[in-house]
Image (cartoon, rainbow, N blue to C red):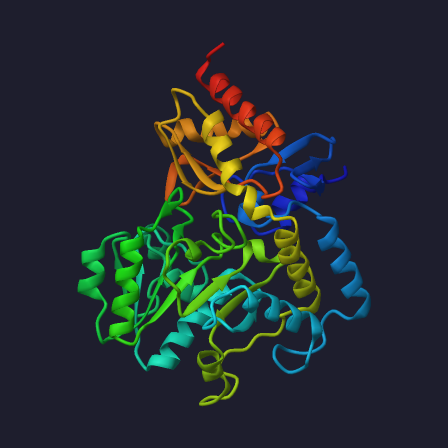
Length: 400
């Protein structure tokens, strides 16, 4: 008997949960995924904030094909002069504040977090790291250490020492806890796994002031916030607060794996000596991934996708009116629908998927539904997706 792909998946691909979604997708285009039976699904979460320009955008696909025909991997990171890396770094830093003028490439967001924590220790000579409750920065060892949830950390202790977790959006705790011992403060301007909690401007300004006072680095993790999703190209642009270090990934690659640390050339040069090769990787800045990322960025800019985010966000909020929806949180096209409890949320999510709409929940907020559609989604497609959510709520509750 021939073993199905589903069974091979369960047998040979390591799992991260007892119950994966197990959709067998064979192709994707725009906002749609298609399974082995050619059933279509609207991807209303963009593969968790990755496919900002949709799946297989023609500009991204063309850039990948053209670069793959020239070269892919040449050498470990940082040794050869490679045009895709240069063009992407120049394009990124041209649209960022002048202190964010240098790019260190990584393979993912969590790797960017790891490098940023090392950079803070190297630059300041201090070891204390401050992070926040319900923060999420990845799940490798260092990134896990600054995660703001003990539930996900307890099985892997001991983790990094000198990590202090304080309440998010609490200015008094910021003033009390950032001291001369602090190497860095790391946070998300919009928390990605709480149902999109937005940082107060005064909270961020207080952190900036205390970091300046004590020569600590301020690290903004925009791994999920960035590349237009928040309603501006980068979420920090809405706050008036500029970080010393910016972390990017997910929506950066147009579907390809890439991340980066953006900071000043002066700070990032600290990795070049004492010791030499202070932070290295093999595949960071892969030429094909950089070409895809540049095409993704150019698409966001040339198609003025950010300009339409607020209108699309308002449309979703207007359409999603139902007695079962307790609140809608978030900003731009990163939103959450709050329901009465986790069980109801999970049942509605399951029904949405059955009805052809991919939605999800949050690590630290299991009673809320994640909504992060591709930025290219049209108003008509939003109306279809929201109708599926409302229909799925009614089906789950037995309302006819």
